[in-house]
Amino acid sequence: MPIINTNGIDLYYEERGSGDPLLLIMGITATGSVWEQHAAYWEKDFRCILVDNRGVGRSAKPAGPYTSAQMADDCAGLLEALQIQEARVVGCSMGSIIAQQLVLRHPEKVRSFVLMCTWARCDNKAKAVFRHIMHCKARLRPEEFALFIQLLIYSKASWDAPIMFAELEEGREQAAVEPHPQPLHGLEGQAAACMTHDVLDELSRIEVPALVIGGMEDSFTPAWMAEEVAVAIPNARLHLYQSSGHAFHWENLEDFNSLVRDWLLNH
Image (cartoon, rainbow, N blue to C red; front, side, top):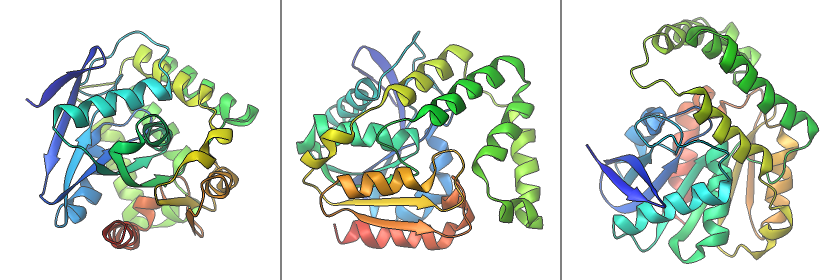
């Protein structure tokens, strides 16, 4: 089982494909395996590295709180253990704030990066959402908690589409039998990292190419957050999906996979 010790914890990861390294960092509650539908496409061109963040999956789940800087150092240690001097990085939601910190703290390790449904700081509403996620995790059965997350991240169009609706139901059923469920303290640690992330004034220091992607109907991390990040990073490109939520990468799967692949191949 591929586990390395970094930054004082055991970190689980998987590798797929060959080529230049591409580090994939997933969001709160999610394991690296959630990249499956994207890695299956990108592995044709890149050596994809899918990591379970601290607090989830088969990585260590120490007591929190965690910070985005700490989790970025976890990833830097992973790259060092794999003897990767420089990688492209894609971060989704919480993974995007980890990616920001990775570029800020270890700029020599990042060639270019993609930030999905990202933010540079949390306003009061965002903090309230993260607190409510913790409260729901503590009180709901796994399949009920999965439903809450789905309601938070998918747009109306997804709920109205028969195929997607069936896939959402299947996802809730899978949550009920998840072999490596995230413990409450792991979620709380990750939520703390999300709420305390505040680097807006530092993003102007970033010199590597950046692609920022958001969904216009994202009610979790609204489009203004992605826009704020794109403005703050010099020469960043912004792409917003219309009629899409926080899960725009699944709602526009083929277009998203192609968009990111093509951009990464040129950066």
